[in-house]
Structure formats: C-alpha cells, structure tokens
Length: 227
Image (cartoon, rainbow, N blue to C red):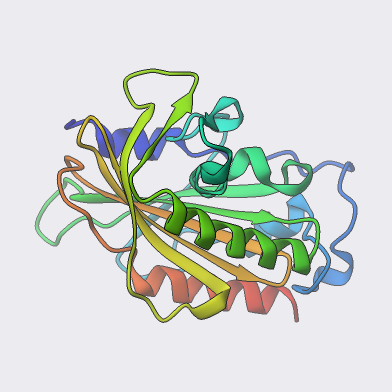
C-alpha cells in the first residue's frame, strides 16, 4: 500500500497530441462546445499555477480505475468508473492530465498525491448529464460493486457522497476498495468541460480532501481560457 502515491502519479492519462485532428471548441470559448486537445492543454493547471504544489504533465494510457478497459459489473455504477477514469468517456479522447503533489515544509517526501484530469464532453448538456448520472450512481452504488477485468483492485467495497457546496455542477465522493485502499474524488462541470480530481494519502489508509485551492485555480484558468 505504500506505493499508492506513486501509482497515482504514474497512472494518470493525458492527450499530448495537439496536431490537426481537433475540431470544435471554436474561439477558445468555455461554453456549450467541447474544447479541443490544444485548448485543454492550455486550460489545464501547470507548474506555478498553485503556490506550494508541484504540478507535472502526464502522458500515456491507463488510470487507477483501469483506463478504457475497465467497466463496472453493474451498469448503474458505470458513471462512477467513468469519473474515476475519464480517459474512457472523454469526447473524442480530448483530455489533459496532471499529477499534483504537496510536500510538507522541511520534508522531501510528499504525504498526499492528486490526479487532475480536464476533459471535454460532447456538449454542455452532455457534461451536465454526466454529473447528474454520477450523482445517481453514487446513491445507487453505496454498497460497492465489482469491475472488469477482475483483479486485486477490481472490487469496490463502498461508495459514499461527501458534503460539499458544489451543487448541481459537481460531485464529491469517496471510494474504498476491498483491499482497503481509500481514494476521494471531486468532479466539476463548466460548460462542456469536466474536471476530475482524485486525492490519496501516502499509504491510502485514510481519506484526504481534494484541496480547494487546486479546484479554485483550475476553475479560474478554465474561465480565462474562454475569454
């Protein structure tokens, strides 16, 4: 379990291909149209955007929920897997991922790691619907569910909603795996863009909150991308 922070750092997926395959997201507007890959890369957090945090771009495939190959064994719980692994549900695979850590002053070892994924939905309505579906899934899947393909981290023991001020535009929930790993997630929606942040402590033994300063900074940068 001591390697869980490293897993979060290495497991995030990002789209680094900003060549001419993008369409939509005209004019950089954060509205009903999906942002392109290049727009997402500009809008996602980068080193220096949040004081006290180290932010790195991550590329590759996969996620802590198994990437595009992971599915819930209960259809009603699939929105939770999609929120944990945005790679599979992002419109046209448009997303940008970051690993974020905060190291305590006087230490060279981070005690928590965060995984941020900024992705596009097909439209603002589709993004809003995905948040609504996620909220329903959290309520319906509190007693847990399995994921496929099966494996050591395939069984989720519990899913619980956390109190938050996100309203209809987001969800804050915690997931505990059968193996004991504990991860907290926040998903927010703005226009056709979705932000998913996972938070995990050094050993994944206790839940840690997603930092408000990270969410606020991402929201401000996304707003600025639309101006």
